[in-house]
Image (cartoon, rainbow, N blue to C red; front, side, top):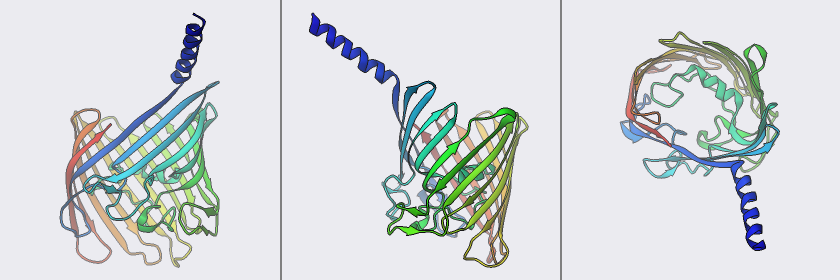
Length: 327
């Protein structure tokens, strides 16, 4: 009898502990036929970073505070290889972080998208996912230029803080990465510590966000984005400047203007973006149009068309269509 009571008590303790923590398996598979505006022929593919397998965990520490972790692997479904077929990127290329969340905000440490790179994408309704994307605001700038094949364009090792929404609808985020980093081998010491952050105002249909980032090579990116939801449609706009330490001449200038409008299960998106290269002033202009048809909350068909006028050469047309499923 005593042994039975002890066993029941132990089971109750384990059950109570389990009830206060959870681990979620999640991910996304996206694949379709795509013909980019880079002149390549059509192929089965999807944009880098879209296909992911992730693990997310939360533990209740009491007092309104929780511990959290997140791991994400990026892969290429058309080949079964690492993200970016044949590019030998690391397994946990997307996200590896751990942190704490509470009434004070969220503190995270690890490798993930910098605050500024997350916020600068708010002006692109295509979320940099299709041939129609107009996510131009960081053109000419890299968060971690040491990483081969663009694997570190927006992700790096850092310590980040995101505030809760304060009075008046204001919030902010800031991250810092030390000069010496183990993210890329061989280890290097940059000219500066990585600094990235944004300040945001959100109230009703209006959102305004302005941010700044300086990488370890002392390259800089500054931006401002805004969105306004009219109800029938959402308007998005952004402007940025890039300043790479190794490039002489005028700063790079990037801008975009876009809209997104839902019509039942169909969402129509359109946008235009322009990039003016740092130093040379050469301009690239892109117009994109796309639509999504929702089959459920997790699955949708998509199709897009884009027309790019490069700084040099003739206009090029891109097109894609495919299916996206979240789990």
